[in-house]
Amino acid sequence: DTAVSQTPKYLVTQMGNDKSIKCEQNLGHDTMYWYKQDSKKFLKIMFSYNNKELIINETVPNRFSPKSPDKAHLNLHINSLELGDSAVYFCASSPGTSGPQETQYFGPGTRLLVL
Amino acid sequence: GQNIDQPTEMTATEGAIVQINCTYQTSGFNGLFWYQQHAGEAPTFLSYNVLDGLEEKGRFSSFLSRSKGYSYLLLKELQMKDSASYLCAAMDSNYQLIWGAGTKLIIKP
Image 1 (cartoon, rainbow over the protein chains, first blue to last red):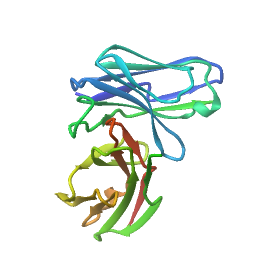
Image 2: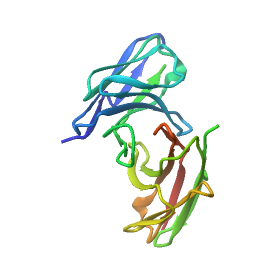
Image 3: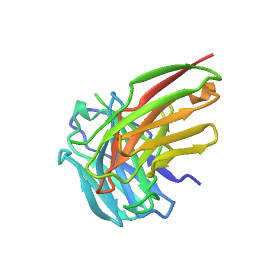
C-alpha cells in the first residue's frame, strides 16, 4: 500500500544515454511534482502537473521532459545525460494546488549517477 | 528574491531540547512547512503553520511569526532516531514551496 512509488531506486548510466524514471501515486491526489536534490541537499522544484496539465516548469534544460499519462502517474525522461545530472530525483504528490491541505508526500527517490 | 535561511548543522544531546530556526522571504505567504529527512530517505511532513503562534504535536512543536518572517521547530526529549535533516519550506502567493537547504541535526548520547 505504498503511497508514492518511484522506479528505479538506483540508476547508474553513461553520459549521453537517455533514461526514464517513473512515478505513481495511489493517494487520489490531483497534483504531482518532480524535484532534484543535489549534493548540497537543496530541493529544487523541476515540474508540477495538476490533473495531467503542466503548471510549474522551472528553468530546467529541455533535455528533461515530463509526461503525465493520467493524474496518478508522472514520468520523467532525460535525454543526453550529463555528469551534472547526477542527483537524487524525488517525485511528490499533493491533494490540489492551493491551501494548507497541500502537504506534499514524497516518493523514496531515484539516485541517478552519470559516469 | 525568495529565500529561506536555516543553520547548516546543529548538535544536541539525547534527552535534551533543541530549537531549529528558519527565516524566510517570499512573494506572498501561504504557510510554513517543516519536513524531516533521514539520510538516504525521502522528506516526510512534520508540521504546517499559517497563523502566528505555537503548534504542538507530541515532542515536536513549531512556531511562526509572520511579521518577522521567522519560524522555529522545537524538539523535546531528543532521541537518537531524531538525527536527521530538518527542512523548512515556505509557500508563496502562487502556492509554490520555497525550500531551505535543511539543518542537519546530530544527536549525541
